[in-house]
Image (cartoon, rainbow, N blue to C red):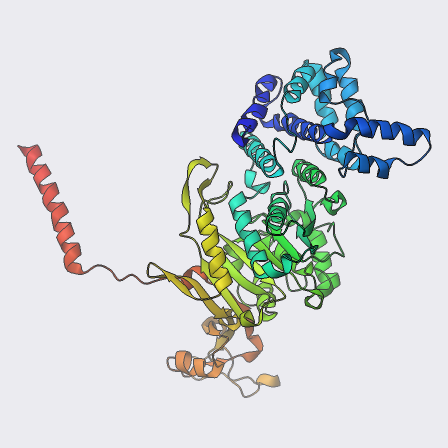
Length: 580
């Protein structure tokens, strides 16, 4: 059964729920039952052995947990002799038996169903007389990994979540990222490490602070398994949405990961991995979303802990918290002396340029660039994500740049690399093909300037190219007779008094001498001006689109005139025809 057919089959359960459930609540039933059936199928081959082992070890007074995990050949187990199909043999007691079956799972799985609030749905289904029919429907489908692999199962979950999000007018993009975007990000963080990752038995860690349903972690695992089956990737993550968290945790359980590393809660307010450092990280945080709910906790950490905490460099405006996730990831980087870290994060355009010199956003960019952490930024096409059509950018950040990249930043304009989807999904109308992903990865790996169809698509800059000094230009106050007013006391005594109405600012590129700029651009026009050096601030911005702009001269006037004449002549003929 392919992914589309499987999604359609599971979605058909909605026909049973119609009338008793609002459309927006279908997912509250379908998602946990899909997870339950998946776990049911995974444990089926070892079911009898686990039940027998549980009885033997319990009778002997021995803690059965490690023995049951070994028998189950998974990182979870179920000690009940029931399964979803057996439940159907006793229709009159299906509610009680279902509770008994779910409670017999190991604690990590029970937590998954608690996050789904599964008990409340079981009660509602039983009351409506639908519990048996729903259970019978799911018992019919085979979700064993031999039939539906983990990658395919991930796509099923994403398809279902997208449908439920559309029905409830929620944003599906809050829950997951398109798979081809994740594949690009995974390529970018691994591409320079292929040699190290091919070493037999190598172990690396990866983290996603906005894990959603676990798609980024899954694709990273798949990449490493494909390139080096003997390598091991330990995953960690945190997720705020209970249903997404439950799916992510269930997915990691099936893959044998330590699900204690998947934590629940708000990453910014309550870091689930406060002391951990990682080799790789991936994230697609919410952008353009205010962080007012966690403002108290974030400001307290910023003020009390400074650079010993996560938010030392500065805080962005409350209306957009995406740069807080950038700082959070930087705080999780494995130190360079211990091997270092590379991560990729998707951001909108705002973090590139919002905020002038001295603002929180500018100070964050300053910290990233002056510490030589930014390796590359890739501009993606519009209409790539399910919940927004705006331009997005992948930042690649590392504290272990190769020597040839040190002090440099590569910008890649991939906005023209896309193919139209056969069918739009929400706001997503475009996708990256395998060829596009390979080309972007090659451009990043080559680290060279490149053009395409006469336009630049890869450019390389010094870190300092993005910096500037904002200088305050003062001019003297004058009395009614036009004479310059001078100070009468203090440090201004005998010096011209600045006229605040004439005060102005200039942004001077960081690489340029301030005095030379001032003489050329200011004194030439206003000879009485001076710089108040006490007010000078350093700022950083990355004007991505401007740096790839190619001037296109207007067409010759004669050509435009000829086109206008052609149009007016045509209109004239039409009018004459009407008169006739």
